[in-house]
Length: 102
Image (tube, rainbow, N blue to C red; front, side, top):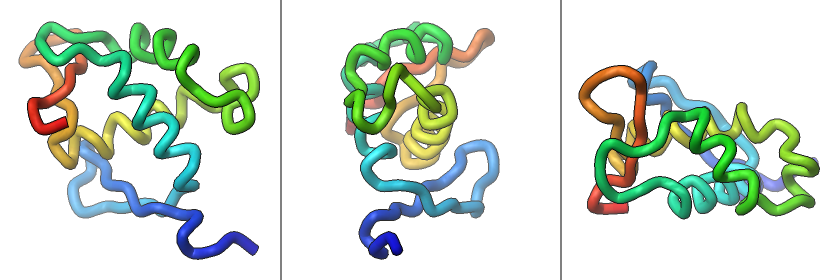
């Protein structure tokens, strides 16, 4: 049975007030990878570009061959947007970049 500290509560930028409990190790690995690849200035990367870029920074024991990386990328993206760690550009397509407090 997983320990309580093996999970972390994340938010969803698209659904304010809704939270989810997810695996801490996978979330933190994806968060760190995403912060490594996102630029600090606009225009930023599209989610597809970020998804390709993070693969090189993910531990293979948590994401063997990049498995499930897309889901975790979206989860981390929406949580980090909700917390103001990353931002999206003002016009389509969605482009992400680090906020100054990241």
